[in-house]
Image (cartoon, rainbow, N blue to C red; front, side, top):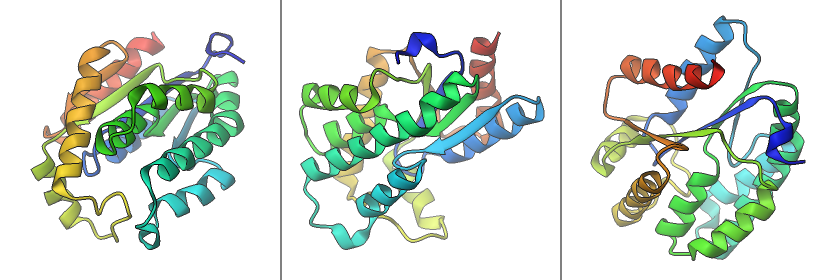
Length: 212
C-alpha cells in the first residue's frame, strides 16, 4: 500500500548520538497529546517485538566483530517489520507518528560512516520501507565535540554504535549535513546547540504547519 493512501502524518527525529533528538521527540509528543491528538511514538531500530529483538543484536557491544554489510541488513530487516506492523497501520488510522530515527540515519551511518554505496543503500531501503517515508525528518545538527560531551554525562552504558571513534562520528555528522542540503524541504535542519525549549517551539511549529 503506497504512501498516498495513508492519512496520518509521519515525522522522524534524527542526528548523531547525543544530538537531543529523543528529548525533542518527547517534547513534541507531550504538546501534541495535550491537544488531544492521536500520537504514536516509536524508534529505530525497534518499534515492534521482532524489530526490538534485532535492535538488541545490532547494538550489543558483544558484537564488535559485526561487519558493515551485516549491520546494514539487520537495520533493513528491522525497518521492514516496523513499517508493515506498526507505522503503516498507525498512518492509516490517522495518527501522528513521531519516530526516533528512520531512513536518514541509514544513509548517514551506513553510507557516510561505514562507506557503503549510497545507491545500494537506496535499493535496500526502498525494499525495506515499501515506499513509506517520513513527511518531514528533523535533523538536529551539533558538533562532534558537543555530542561527545553529552554522551559522557549520560548515565547509561554506551551501545556498540555509541562506542565509535571521533573520525566515525565526524563522517556521520558530515553525511547528515550533505543529505540535508540536498533535500531541505523534506529534511529540516535545526541547530541542536540551542536551548531545549527554543528548539521544542521551533519543532512544534514545523509540525503545526503540516497539521494546518
